[in-house]
Length: 290
Image 1 (cartoon, rainbow, N blue to C red):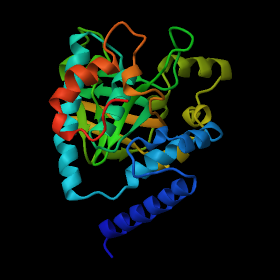
Image 2 (cartoon, helix red, strand yellow):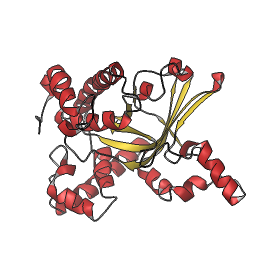
Image 3 (cartoon, helix red, strand yellow):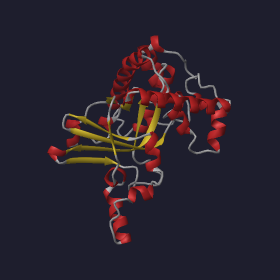
């Protein structure tokens, strides 16, 4: 058996195992967004890592060529639509809102997906440019959500509709940054301390401990290596720009699409769906509004 066939057989077995486990709990895995089902939520309440099972199920789910063609038709266009909407409203650093909306929109359009949270690093070596959104860093205010959020919708391994909104207007990095990132076949990488921990926080630890610990990221995120076995870190190169995505957790909005950013004063999930997505993607809709 060739390597590709061995990997396919391993994914099929993994999916069957996870699917059986979920169904034994009373979860109907045939329905999009089954993470909202009462049986799933009940299990999640006493198992903080149970949401990983949804992502593993989606990641290992067998796909047909026809399904992949549907995904490749929908996903880039949806990412572009969201990028344009958020950019027109100057909604900078809004990766959580955009990725949360995208997942729940994809459910309604018949595309399986899940969200990841962690670090995202941007580098243009030839211009000596580096920008980091690290999951471990000092914060400007208590309760700030650090790091970055993005989406996975197989066969796409990275969907990032707000990549160009992560730096302020006028930042030199913006000249090299595409409006969206929609990637298949991104290279696997091993995360380093620079990917996970911001420079200021690293310096604080070095001062307090009297030494530099190159394994500090594994001390601060003890599950990083184990999580990476199912959800590996990846690197994307777009001309001079190098992007590194280092996930540390699965993230799916705990509210319905219409309520995402519902308390905000800008773009809400209800507006995005009713005014833009539903009219544009009407032929793909498999689930209506909630």
